[in-house]
View: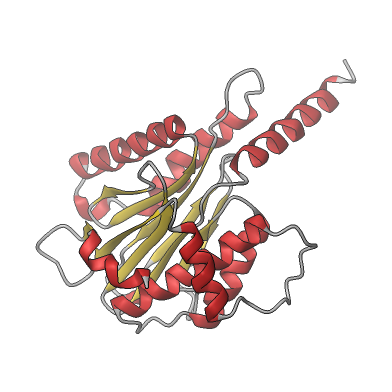
Length: 262
C-alpha cells in the first residue's frame, strides 16, 4: 500500500519523458503581433499546423495528427457553443483554455492507464488593441503559459511553441530582442521566420546548451532556411484587426509568401 504513491509518481515521470521524446522533433511555431494584427508562422512538410478556431482566435499545434485534430475540434466546439448560448463577444481564449482544455489535458495525462494527448498547443487571440492580444501555450499535461495578465503595463507581444524547452528559450530570447509591435506584415513574417530558424537550429544542436550564446548570423539563418525549404514549405496565417466586419483569420497564399524564400 505504501508503494502506491511512488508508483504513481514514477508512472507520471515515465509518461512525461515518453511524451517529451515524441514531441522533441516538432517544427517550431511563432505567433507575434504586427501593426495590423497577429501573424502565425511555421514550416511544414505534409500537413497543416495552423488553424482557425473561432472569430479572433487561432491555433498552432505540434504532435500526433490525430490528437491535434481531436483537440482542434474540441476547441472549435467549445467556442461555438459558448458563442451560440451567449454571444460571440463572450468567447474568450482565457475561458476556453482555463476552464475546458487545460483540465481535460491534465486529466488525460494523469490517467496512467489511458492514452495521453501527444500534442502541444499555441493559441493567439486578437484583442481590441495590441495591448490586449493574448498568446497562450498549453502543454500535454494541461500546464498553461501565457504572455501575462492583460492588466500588466508591458508584456511580450508574441508566443512560441517548439519541441524542446531549449528551442523555446532561444526563440523567446530572440523575439525579445527583435520584435516590435509596430512591425509591418513583411517585417513581422521575416522576424517570425528568423525566430523559427533559431528554434530549429536549437532543436538539432548537439552541443551543451548555453543561453548566452550569440544568435545565428543573417547568412547562417538564410543557409538553414534554404536547407529546410528543400523538404518543407512556409505556412502562415493572419488575425487581421483591420477587418471588423469580416473574418479576422486568413491564410497567406503562396504568392504572398514567395518573396520571403529568398
